[in-house]
Structures are given as structure tokens and as C-alpha cells.
Length: 291
Image (tube, rainbow, N blue to C red; front, side, top):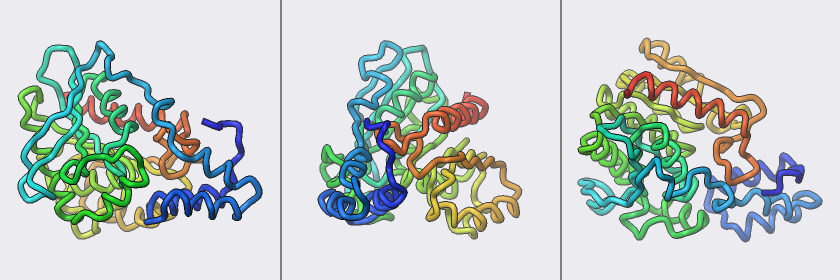
């Protein structure tokens, strides 16, 4: 990763547009090259480098990881696949659903699931693209493929994934959920839809649920937000008002000097100090509510 390269704010903003729109990589790089001097190099440095970013090996002796298939009635195809990572210690274990961004189950999310398992949790990272062939090996195609899906069916796949994990033979029956970007919004969705069946939720820079649905939330939430994230932060006042009106248990943390995606250590948007603190708070909630 090109940590020494100073990246212009305009390139960061363009990258955010690229991540959350139908813009392809070629267009992103072309636009960056004419936006500012040195823009192409800046843009290239923002593209994820997953192999360099992995923190827990899939052969780590503390965990056992494998892919599992399970039914998903009402979802995209009726079937789902996910990356299940269990601690090698004796179970049953508290369980955590790890929900990907808007591009399918990429290596960063798999690494987060492995990190969770090293902390004693049974982690499942579902691949919302599995009914249509799975994560295609790159984020560009994954983003387009995920956007093409019926979104209500895709969310049903996540609900079914949560139910599968909660009832897994290695689970203690207590379920938490965390997710990033699209997965953060889906964590909020699960909190609404599952009510007391979800024991805790930690959305990272995710879209807020409709204010009128917040009353259905029973799980305590730790809401992780970037300081510079206009799209997501604009939703917070209404979300906060609804949480307070419903006397919900929540914490809201805004990390100074961060951008959307600050936890993702495969790109220069990563902020190590903020990511570490957010992870500490995530584990704190899950250990207090699931174990």
C-alpha cells in the first residue's frame, strides 16, 4: 500500500462515488487522471490490496474455517453459501454474523470473520452473491453483480444466514451481527427484523433504518461512524431521535479524521488507530452480551 502518497480529497470523494455507484474501474481511473495532478497514482493507491491486508491466516491453529451451504427460503435462489469460522476451543460458542460490503464476500470480510473466531466467536460471513455464482474475485464485478440482485431477496438471504448461525450446533444460541457499508445497513435491518432474536449489533458506517421501524429494535447497538461520511452521517439525526424516543440501548462513535471504510485495512482509507478502537468496542459489546 502506498502509505506515503498524499491523496487529494477530490480523489477520495471520487473513490467513494466509484464504490457506491455503477462506475467501473476504468472510468474511475480515467476521471482521476484529469481531476488533479498525480490523480492516477492516487486513485491506483486506493484500490484494495487484499493479499497484503490479511491479518489471520486461514491455517491459523486457533481456528477452523470452511465454506458451508444452507437453505435460504425466500432468498435469491433458495440456497446460500457462507464462510464459517469456528474457534478450535470446545464449544458451544457465541455467534457473530459478519456482513460484507456492497460487492460480495471479498477477502477482507473473510479475514474479519477469522479475527472474530480468534476471539472465541463462531463467525459466519455469508456471500450474498453465492446464489449467482459467488464473489467473482474482484470488487468491480462483485459490485455490479450485487446491485443487479433483488434487494429484498438479498436481505432475506441475510436473515436466513442469521437464523442458520443462531441455530448451529456449535452456537450457544446468542447471536450478534456486524457489517460494513452495505453490511452496516444490513446489520441495522437485522436489528429491526429480528427484534429480541438478535442479542447485539455493531454497524460500521451503515445506512440507518426508517425512523418508524426503530421501535422494533431490541438489541443494544454500538454504531461506528466516520467523521467524513456525508451520505451516512446525514441519516444520523433522525436515527438518533428514534433510538432515544424508543429508549433503546446504543452508543454512537464518530472517529476523528476518518472516512467511510476506515476499518478496511486493504486501502489507504484505513485508519489504524480508529479501526483498533472500533474493533475493541465491537468485541466489548459482543463479549458482554453473547458470552
